[in-house]
Structures are given as structure tokens and as C-alpha cells.
Image (cartoon, rainbow, N blue to C red; front, side, top):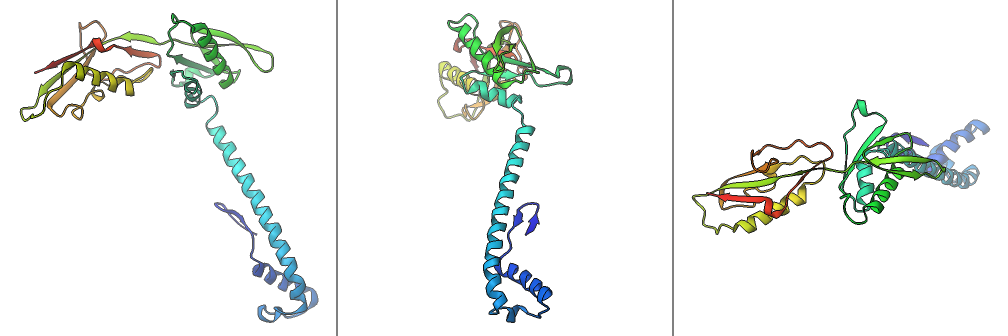
Length: 269
């Protein structure tokens, strides 16, 4: 059988096997069969059935090797993206309805994991949700990984040992939003009401912003949303309107801007 890095082992064809057998017959019996006169000989009749059997065996061997190759590839993929990866943890929590974020790893945090889960510790049923989150973390993080945070539950693992699993609650930052828009001198459209604009800003922000993400104000209401406008400026304030910012807020993994519809102001000139 021939071997290639991409395709693995390739079984020989029956004619190719017969030709190899012809060479062996010539060497064993001191004959001089050529490819042409070997066909129809008594040796050919006996070798043909043998060649078919050899090809069947090579086909089975190639299939076994392919399965082994696939297994090795899937194992390598699992190693390269271990279960303790941030995307894996987030997917695991999200599958149970929890919005979470994970602190990006740095050298100083080796052996630890910091997870923030968007939960209200004063809401009804929080104790059960806390237990559910910690149970999920216990199923995902290896026992050698120390989880950090203020919220903690002791979980009994399958080997009977108990380990503490922790997470943190969001650093909730109440903010006000303010849109300042200048109407285009070429505008022939009806300018939406303040309520409609505020709802659009609110919906856009809720659709693309969540716990741990940078707050990017200029993404939440653009000229695509307001073809009637010449310029738009969306700002945020975290000190009750004393100061306003239009730059991106560089968030930590546990930061969460919070605002309601009534916290959005619209100014059109």
C-alpha cells in the first residue's frame, strides 16, 4: 500500500497486485512471464483470487488507519481546546441560561479562574441558582484549578471529595445615556419622536452589549438608524450627569453598565 500524509494508506488495485505477484512467480519458478502473457496462465488463475483477497485486506487496513487518524485528530483538538477554556465555560453556563464572563488569563493568575455571573443575589431563588452555577463550575473546572470570587458553594465530586467553587457577581455601574443629534439640512423624512429613538437605542444596546464587554456608545445608534440626521453623538455618564463621555469604556470582566429606558435622553438640534 502507498501512504500519503493527507490521505493515509491507499489500497493497491487488483492489476497492481497481480503484477507484483507475477514478479514473484518469475523469481520463484525461473519463468519469464510478461504482463501480456501472464494473463491466461495457470499461475494467473491461482493468483487472481489471491490478489482479490489481498486487496480486501489492504482496504480493511486502510479503513482502520483512517479511523485511527480521525481519533488522533479529535484527541489533539480536545487537547488544544481543553474543557477549562473560557469559551467552553461560557458555553456551559449559557446552555443553562446563565450570562457570564471570564477574566482573561495572565501569568500571575496561573492555576486560578475568575468567573462572573449576571445574577441578582437579592432575587427569589438565588440560593438554588448559586448552587446550580457552582455545580456547573465543578463539572467544568479540574480540581487543580482554584476558582475565585465572593459567592461560594462546597460541591462533592464523583470521588467523594468536597471542593469549594466560587464566582463573583457583577460590578453594576448605573449610567445615563444622552444622544445629541443634528438634523440634516437635506432631510425630507419625519424625525421620530424621542420615545421611538430612546427605544431604538435601548434595544440596540441590549442586543449587543452584556456583562464584561466594553461599552461602545457609537455602535448603539448610528446614521443607519437615523437617515434624517447629519451627525450623532451618544454619550454616557456614570456620575448622574455631572460629566459625559463618548469614548469606549474599557471594561473589566465583571463590569456591567446598567440603564433603563428612562435613563436615555435625546437632544435634537
